[in-house]
Amino acid sequence: QAPLQESGPGLVKPSETLSLTCAVSGGSVSSGFYYWSWIRQSAGKGLEWIGRVSTSGSTNYSPSLKSRVTISLDTSKNEFSLKLRSVTAADTAMYFCALEGRHDAFDFWGQGIMVTVSS
Amino acid sequence: DIQMTQSPASLSASVGDRVTITCQASQDISNDLNWYQQRPGKAPRLLIYDATNLETGVPSRFSGGGSGTDFSFTISSLQPEDIATYYCQQFGDLPLTFGGGTKVEIK
Image 1 (cartoon, each protein chain N blue to C red):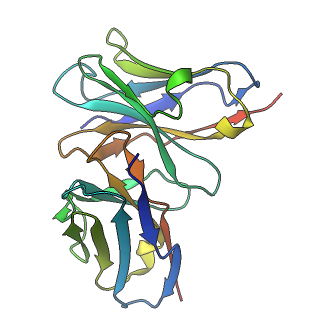
Image 2 (image 1 turned 90 degrees about the horizontal axis):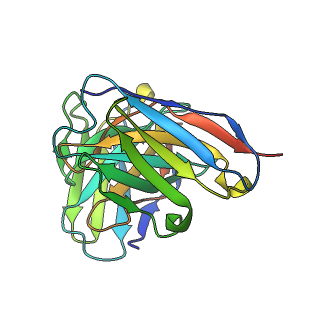
């Protein structure tokens, strides 16, 4: 079991970089064969997968965001992170981190962090 | 990208009713489909994986079916705590994609 907790600024200015971290407790980000994902949800809208990093550090990204996104592991802090560059108001959303575990499903989720893009 | 089309977008039913939601994939995804429940203000929760398998701890009134492109999710007897939005999600191919959601309300 690996509880997840997102952290980062709740307000980001347009054109700047959104940076979030997901702290993992109860397990190691680099053990097993799992994926650590970021997913977002705009107000009143559905869920959008942003991308993921494997326990070995390989990444996959949504094509619609690939040019602006970096997801990485920090094994020393047992966390993984999201960087989304050149943000606009359209990036305003609740951001969730999640573990894609045993069944190719998102078994565990963080509580989510609301990020607003505004000057 | 594989498009996931869920229907209906919302429904209202009485306590004890049988409720069914459908999810259609734009291409064959075998049984690579999961279902989630999202209560207001909360993170989603995995209910069904691999189209038909009940996640540990999930009540047996929830079930899933289907394969290929057409899938269903059923609540056999709707309870007040089932008020939520339900999402399907495919993992047959990248990028991972979700259905638009079905909001379930009590009549």
